[in-house]
Image 1 (tube, helix red, strand yellow):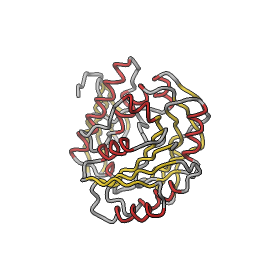
Image 2 (cartoon, helix red, strand yellow):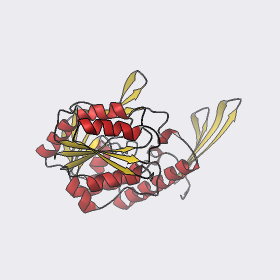
Image 3 (tube, helix red, strand yellow):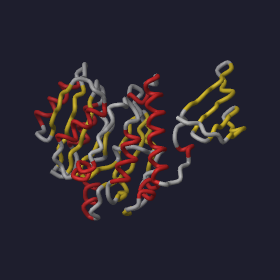
Length: 290
């Protein structure tokens, strides 16, 4: 088995079909598709079972709802592929996505292969993250730079050597309901071996208004603060220079008048910036600890 693709599935009946169809049509046939049904209460499980009856490469794990981190960890434990990839249930991949990533990873004996991201917003397909050429990167700072961390701390446009992940033994944290991929990506890109960039291997990220990242609440805000702090502390320990403005601010205060954004205050560690009518008017350097 060359690649194990892990899909966390929670109440995904409206889009899981498109996701599975894109995986079933991969030009790389030697894959297994591990669907982790995370306590869905809709018709998701029935859809998964229908696909599994037609394609023996599809495996289903059913568990009570524990969140995306637990779902991915369960998938990793079951995976048997040489490499592991992750796909969100509302996204899709190009037909030769995994073949291109796998061939480049094998060619260069890389632990990670990274492809493109295109954002799908209704009928529009917008280039979001583009690889210019096939290159190999060994140093952490270079891997962070080419993958545009922290702005693009995404796990799903990449594949990872399974034995290297198991040796690292760094599971997704159950403390996070969202933003769990941020600290995971920082650690994995640092501690695994070489990363190869692969042009024209496209992951399609669908802008789904029902996804967890669009349901903003106090827990999500807490997760964002915690993930930011964890990532920044990790990068500082590595001795890599950080542009704090690349990370979402730890806190944001807005003042609106009649629906018009008058004042926007963004607070990062060591920096607070005041925006008036979206224009930065004052920058204060101060140690704002998380």
